[in-house]
Amino acid sequence: MKEMHLVIVSPERMVFDGEVSQVTLPGQVGEFQILKNHAPLISALAAGKLTYTSGTEMQSLNISGGFVEVSNNQISVCAEL
Image 1: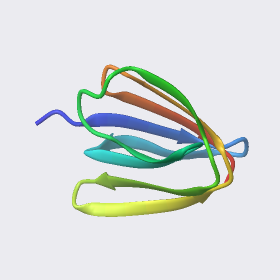
Image 2: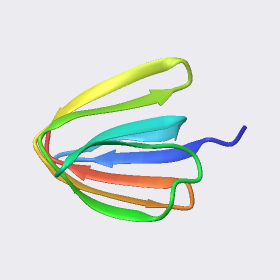
Image 3: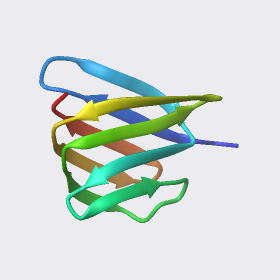
């Protein structure tokens, strides 16, 4: 099964670049989840917890805000950690 490709960058460094099966993000009006074949989306992110599942491991990061773009199973996150 082809998964989604997630790239997370902060102003200081590349945080993650790899395949994931799901991503949960803190939106401005609440938490939302990105799954395979999600509709295209650009959204601002609020402070909170970003989580993603890569393989069998769930990882999480605390962010203080940022932006996300989703298109064709490619997810790009620019966030302040």
